[in-house]
Image 1 (cartoon, protein in one colour):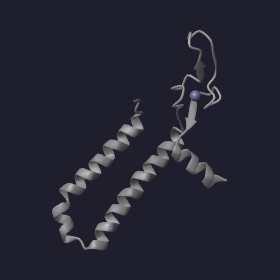
Image 2 (tube, rainbow, N blue to C red):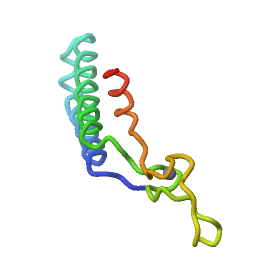
Image 3 (cartoon, helix red, strand yellow):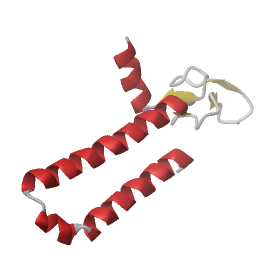
Image 4 (tube, rainbow, N blue to C red):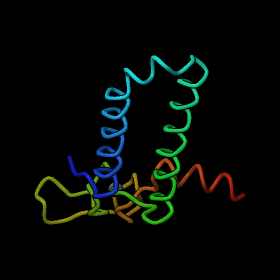
Length: 105
Ligand SMILES: [Zn+2]
């Protein structure tokens, strides 16, 4: 399983947020229920904002069928045709990029 640096950062970031939420659990007792919800919503907005930003900078990921090669190999491994999933490009558009495309049009 390949993980690009941005995903690693995002995963680390969400881990930090979770750790922060756990550390702030005592403080959270002082917060009212709507304030706790607001903190969670803001954290989710920040994380999804970072994810969408990453999807504008790096809109593509490797095609899951051919692992980015763009080739569908014959059993011998010598000959190949274009991967039917990505039509030989070897790439797929990331989920966040498709969301942004829909917003643009
Ligand atoms: Zn492919």
